[in-house]
Image 1 (cartoon, rainbow, N blue to C red):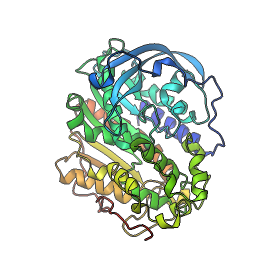
Image 2 (image 1 turned 180 degrees about the horizontal axis):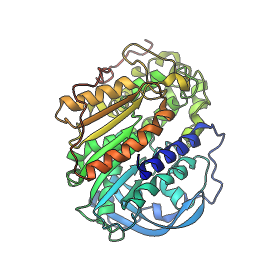
Image 3 (image 1 turned 135 degrees about the horizontal axis):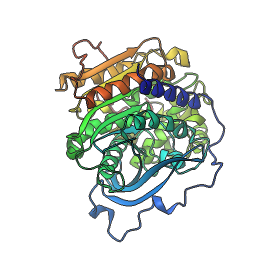
Amino acid sequence: MNRAARLIATALAAAALATAAPVATTTATAATTAADPFYRYDGSTPLSSIAPGTVLRTRTLSYHLLGLPTPVQAVQLLFRTTDAQGRPSAGVTTVVRGLGSDGSRAVSYQSFYDSLNPEHAPSRAVAGDVSLGGAIANAEALFVVPFVLQGYDVVIPDTEGQTADFAAGPEYGTTTLDSIRAASASTATGMDADTRFGLLGYSGGAIATNWAAALAPSYAPDVNRRLVGFAEGGLLVDPAHNLKYVAGGVVWPGVIPMAITGVARAYGFDLQPYLSDYGKQVFAGMQDASIVNALGQYPGLTWQKLAKPAYADPNSIPEYLDAVNKVNLGSAATPTVPGYLAQGNGGVLEGTFSNISGIGTGDGVMVAGDVRALARQYCATGNGSVKYQQYDLLSHLGAAVPWAPTAVLYLNDRFAGKAAPSDCGRIPAGNSLAPERPAPVGS
């Protein structure tokens, strides 16, 4: 394992530890950046008349770690992108130049900041904002170092958009792709329309990475032709399965209200008519929560405890059903570039003992059978360059550590032009990724 790979492994371990301890508040401990004018587009031309990926505003500042400025300079870009409902919106990304970079190669690193609060986005941490919910983005700053040392430029998009639409995968994907477009178009970054990119992300970052790879051929063919590959681990594939898998567990059940809140926010529907009094209380407390507020805070939680009895099956809620099917990667297109997918399967180590028929086991929050099914689907639909690795004895946090060095070496090989490995034909069977079906009210 080379030095860069060891640094990546250390960084992932540190970031994982930052998420492991539940925290009671998300209140910022430094001056809030909510009013920062950089994040607002106020131009006279409507966003709908501006091409996706167009740079709207640029600034250069010191890269901050835990609120302290470093000698490293970062370029931040406000750019035009597209939200989950296909509407024009403004996104933000951060660019750090590699040592000795000639602008020919870059890594788009998708953070697992996992939050319903825009203040926890990576760009806010880079700009110096300090908050408990933003601890993940601060810890992940360590990921920048190994790539920068190797001469890669690093692009770090705020994948959830400016309203923090947690778990809304298609929006993560379009934001990531338009971030690459913006970084390539800006005169301040040293990159251009020929810069090659690799995509990298774990957990929440894997959502953005896979959706970007899947959407690139249709949404951003100009970016797709420059992608060398994607590397991801701990992937959310079919969220309807995950909500059932984590239910009743010890550590991860808090992700149920977090994910449903994020998807409802992204697709614009109101959950209140379907919630029990207890559910309303929980969801009210989730509106600006980070994953650090959810981990271990709701042991034993299930959807049935959050909903009115008539809506005990969430598929009886039309808006939920429509949205959850839109964020199912199994219904998205197959990426055309090589991919490395890794997944833990030792979820019992994080207090998830579920083994429901048709869903099975996972890493504590992500479902292993879903990831296997997606990898097999890619193999069967034209992408023969799929590497799949399953860590049967490791949980979500644990699997991140061995995944990380493998992922960086995988991308190094793609940039070097080496033949992509394939596990097609050797990946065990997985789950059905068919769309969820409606259920009657009161079922």
